[in-house]
Length: 187
Image 1 (tube, rainbow, N blue to C red):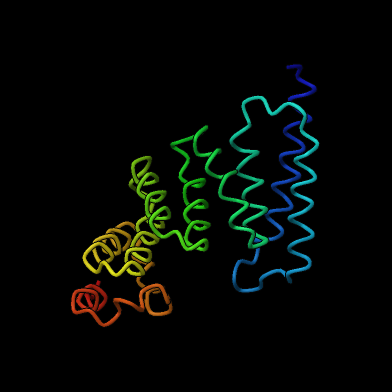
Image 2 (cartoon, one colour):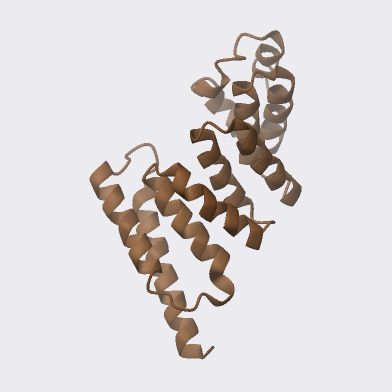
């Protein structure tokens, strides 16, 4: 591949990433209006369509496509793209996190947990993976694993303690003595 083609591909990828950033820049505090969000997500997809030779960027392109669909709440469509991206880059935790997010919203908690367990195998030091596993095990009704993973998340990043009280995923185990004990520990 010529340097010119490689540079063009990088420019297109940055453009697509920029559109995704515009969708997520304010997070939950000021989410995009659905019509604006969807318009930007469609721009991501059409921008990525301009790449004729993905080279070694196939996984990243699939990930960006999956993220665009995920941002439009098209989780079922995002799953195969993210799964394929994970096959290309099995150690990429961000792909696994997105895949788990989509599986959860497709009512496939078992596959969401599996995707996060695979993310832990790739890098056990990322607190959000432990936190999300705690959430998913809580939804599955497994207090022991929910508490174990939440404890790990707290150990890696104590700031996660501040999120627990507003996290609805913990409602199924919120009144369990083990869960209460973990969340009343003073640090």
